[in-house]
Length: 92
Image (cartoon, rainbow, N blue to C red; front, side):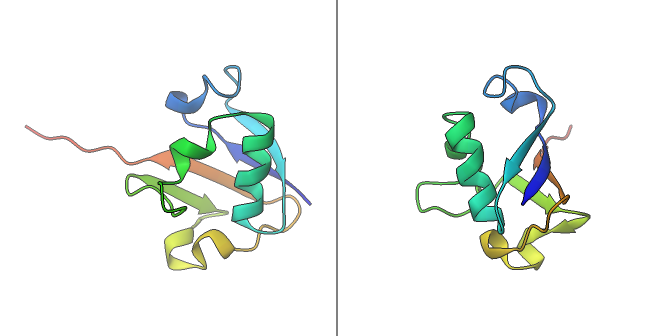
């Protein structure tokens, strides 16, 4: 199963500048493993040392935040759009 993964600007150094790449897997965890196989180092920017999503990284499968679905076990059917979005904080 192939999915399209949108890559934020800050992680494009891992994808050779590509803003969108393809990855295969039946779940988000498998997608991330496929990304790592093709773009070494990217997994460490998405997952923390315990293997969970980093606190300030949001991942959407379709239009749904995976934290409200099955996290890394969220299914990724063929053709799914996945978005990796770093959280932005700031203020005055």
